[in-house]
Structure formats: structure tokens, C-alpha cells
Amino acid sequence: MILPHVGGMFLQLSLWDLVQTSGPLPKGVMVILVVFSLLSWAVAFSKWAIFRSARAANRAFLRAFRKAPGLDAVAAASEQFRTSPLVAVFDFGYSEVQRQMKSRGSVTNPLALERSLQLGMSEEITRLERNMGLLATTATVSPFIGLFGTVWGIIDAFQQLGTAGAASLRAVAPGISEALITTALGLAAAIPAAIFYNWFGNAIKEFGARMEDFQLEFLNLTERSLEG
Image 1 (spheres, rainbow, N blue to C red):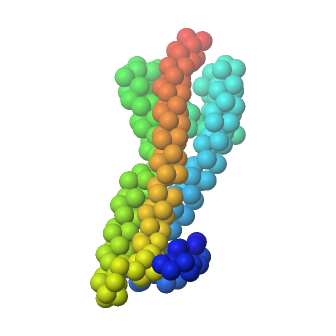
Image 2: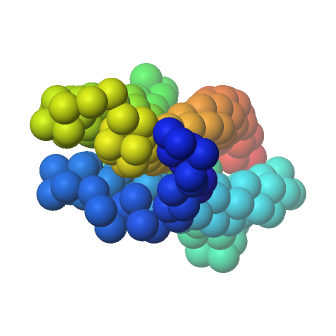
Image 3: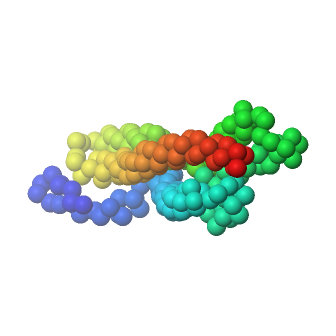
């Protein structure tokens, strides 16, 4: 970074020089923002891998489910697709069917079966939403943390201007540049986190819609199995 100096001279400062010359509080703000950014990227990569695997497992499990003659056959095949959210929903429903069959010989309480499927869906949505709060917090809080560091740095820069006794650009320019770094870091942490949050949020809604559709397919297969 090149900063103009009164009198025709130039003061050259790199970004790293500005970071090193920052005071303890701006450095602390920078560390907090870097930590937020690293954590949000870690969550993003983890979610991307989990959702990618879940989508592939959902497709494979649905193919097996639709070809199966009954619930027992699906239960045997489901072990191959444990990363699928649909398998978790199936497990809840299948367990309820088994309970009713053992106690009454038939599925006599379809409402209880529907509630079991809903419970399985709720648990899977909760699992998929894990760590989404960190992305939301990073997207919301990081710009304000960066702004706090900037305001503090500008205050410090003007205090140095007062002690210099003259309106020297050389006296305040490095301080203002240091202050603006925290705003840049805050935005650098917040913008990707906001994008990831919205992207994964839409993916979770898609998974939820797939699970709701699967509940209907499960109920249909249960009726066909009992009729057969």
C-alpha cells in the first residue's frame, strides 16, 4: 500500500506492516474475525460434503425403496444407505409398524405411524441444521465487530493527529488504514458466511420436502404390504 505524503514524498506500507503496527485491541479484533472466518469455512466444507453424500444416498435409497415388494425388504436394503436422511425417517416408521404388528397383528393406528414419521423427519432436519447457527452468527456479527475495530482505530488516529500538532496526512494515514483493515476483514468473514447460510438453508428445505414426499410413499407401501 502506498500512502501519499505532504511535500511530494511517499510512504510505502504493506498490508502486513499495517497489521503488525496495529495496537492490541485492533489485533484482537482481527484475530476474532479470522477465527470466525475459518470456522465458517470449515462448517461450509463439512456441510457441502454431508449434503452431497446425503443427496446421492437419497437417490439410491429411493430406487431400492420403489422396487422393494415390502417393508422388510426395504429394511434389509436400507443398511447400505445410512447417510440418507430418508433412511432415518424410514427407520422411525418401520419401528412403529413393527410395534403395532407385534402387539395387535396389524397397523391399527395410522395416526401414530404418521407421528413417528414426522418425528423422524424432525430429527433429521435438526441434524442437517447443526452448526448453521455459526454461519448465521458470522454473517450477522462480523461486520459490526469489524466496524468496532475501525471506529477505535480512527479515534486513535485522530488522537495521534492532536499530539502531532499539525494536520499531517503522514500522521493519520497509517492509523486510518489500520482501522479500515478490520472493516475489510469483517466483510470478508460475513459475506461468504451469508452466502453459505442461504445456500445450505435452501438445501435443507429441499431435504425437508423430499422427506415429506417420502412419508406418503412409506404409508402407501405399508398399505400395500398389509393388503398383500
